[in-house]
Amino acid sequence: MLGRERGGLRVCYWLTLVTGLVECLCFAGAVFGWASLVFVLKSDGYFSYLCVNKTVNGTITEDCGAQDEQLSIIFTVASFMNNFFTLPNGFLFDHCGTRVTRLVGISIYTTGTLLIAFSNAALSVLLYPALSFIAVGGILFLVTNMQVGNLFGAHRSTIITLYNGAFDSSSAVFLVVKLLYQDGVSLRASLIFLSSCSVVHLIRTFLLMPRSHIPYPLPENYNYGLKCGNARTSRSQENGAGSSNIDTSQVTETTPFHTGNSSQAPKTETAERSFKSCILSWFFLLHLLWLSVMQLRHYLFIGTLNPMLNRLTAGHPGLVSTYTNAFAITQLCGILCAPWNGLILDRHKGKPREAGQSETEADLKAAVLSLFLTVLQCVLFSLCAAIPVLPLQYLTFILQVLNRSFLYGGNAAFISIAFPPAHFGKLYGTVMALSAVVSLLQYPCFALISGPLGGNPFAVNVALTILSCLAFIHPVFVYLHCRRQAAERTKANNPTSS
Image (cartoon, rainbow, N blue to C red; front, side):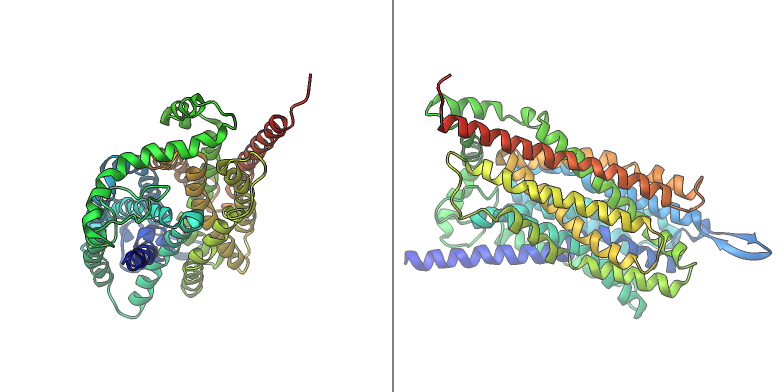
């Protein structure tokens, strides 16, 4: 009987994992398929009134620079909202639990898709709230799904990065919308279908997700949802999940830093690991720098991809469409690239640790390689993007999706490793919100390109490549921290007379 119940729980865990992946893959990060959607919006005449005719060398040409700028602003606002609202979303998730947070997210996301569905060229301004709603609702799907990693203990980081990879790959949703549009399916029909999928989200919320949170470490025979394992015990465990999650996770994360036998040590460390102490730590500040500079590089690339392709192809619509499709197809590979980062982070699991080394210290040491490779990928991607050679952009697209998968998966995984899980939602929200402020620099960058630089982004691309190198500070700092801890352990294990 007990074996059958445990088997039922494992099936439930896997159903939650797989359906969560489908949800993130098909919906959560759709806003980052902006380049594909722009192609459709331009074809439907959104903001076309901003295009003007001008004469160059006696030839009349259409200048749509103002249209490109308006569409770029929409993406800037949406990407800002995607990150900035992660902060209140994190507080909502920590204090109200999974069910309430998901219901809010589903409502916001569906409103956004319906706004696009019922917009047209005369109501182009509806794109501003629509894209922002899709961005905010999508990040709520991701935030509530990442806790599923807690169900699979030793593979926790791999699953967190896998979900972030699915989030990245979901930008291909608008590629499907674009291809359907070219085959005669209207933008309205596609978006109404996406809106109707909210019914599936609601079913999953009540059947395959907890009411509060999934605790870590996971209690034995933990169950959740309306019917997962033993339905009667599910309710009692749900009621205690919030408080027990906070207490046990703080002790789990903090006590490894103390190798002595003092009973006072865990209490002191737990008290120090408050939310305020976390955000004022060098770990958090350098992680914010790491995320912000690379995220700015990605956002500017995505937001200016259509104008860049128009410039490199001399305005050839067929080539622009081909490269836009290639970019969107590479985004599908995000879900394949992200687990590589998770495997790097989890490569030490199951192996014996060094003498006196805690699990947290081992996790931090494993994170150094992940942080370093992420920055290296970003610098290479930025260099390729700066070179104005059209065929080279295929390599740029590959490096971009690889780096983006490592960036966001590594961001969530590092926060779960370096800080108490009780503060995960708030810390994840804070770092995303503060990085969103930095991402607003993409608009002045775009204005600089389209204005004084005459549409040539080379100088801005070089500047952003140099700026990306600052992110190397973070893995170096974590590496030095791990070396310092190793030296302290060696000194403690081999005391010498002074």
